[in-house]
Image (cartoon, rainbow, N blue to C red; front, side, top):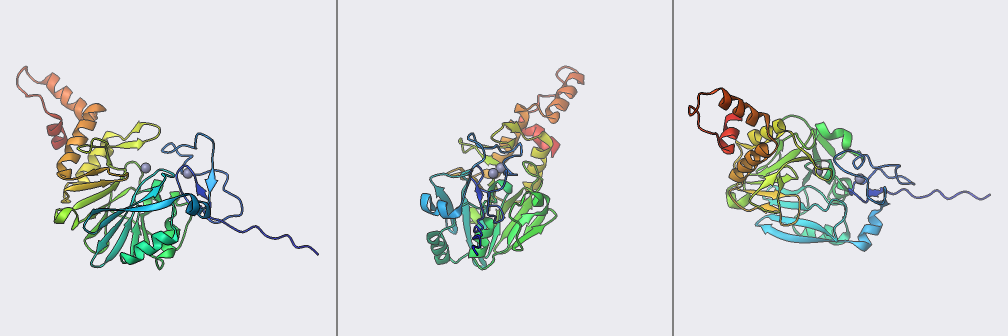
Length: 308
Ligand SMILES: [Zn+2]
Ligand SMILES: [Zn+2]
């Protein structure tokens, strides 16, 4: 009797976003993350790959960002092309955001740097192969905000969902819930970053612009849908109490090196002015009702100040 050999199961990765799905014998019918308006199905249709293939075709590169911060990039670019960060503290290392490739060389390099105590990821576009990373580093817990639970396409017991506004981790690291681009969007604050002045790891919200004096906001980057004014105002308000001088964005070299808090506030004001925010409309209304010359024209920064 011939017994049909069962096909082995693989955790397929979406080529467009890098998300790894639950192991299966055949690739999923569609990628949930790329079927959403904040992403897109690849121009050649839905395509899938595997980690075994990526380990042959791609490699990870490490870059020193500052003392205790390494960024990790996949080369050549794959999926969305974001960078991950290894943040080293006296109480252990955190992997912030994630990339699709994990290979023996990367594991060895990170073990030399002290391994990974925990993983946290800004939002579903960067979930990629998070479970593989956790499994390779002693089941490091993956901290995700519960409001994005529906976007986890490879559920696993190592994922810890948290609710609320902030989650202190260890070593001066804190997750801050800043909904907008995604309901469960979170940024990472590191008290000891930027030479002790504080650093913010923002994923793509705020997104550090090519002109690195500025950041911006989008609901959908590939489909050019701006983020609404109220979400932008709330993000700036939420981050106001946190000291930081630097913002590390999602992509290579997209870092606001210093004065990042001021740059965030100026950028939000510029953005709100560009989209004709309700705050701006209200200001115009007041101006119309005021007696001529009785009220000076508010600057964008003053308008932002007013809506805080
Ligand atoms: Zn996808
Ligand atoms: Zn995104």
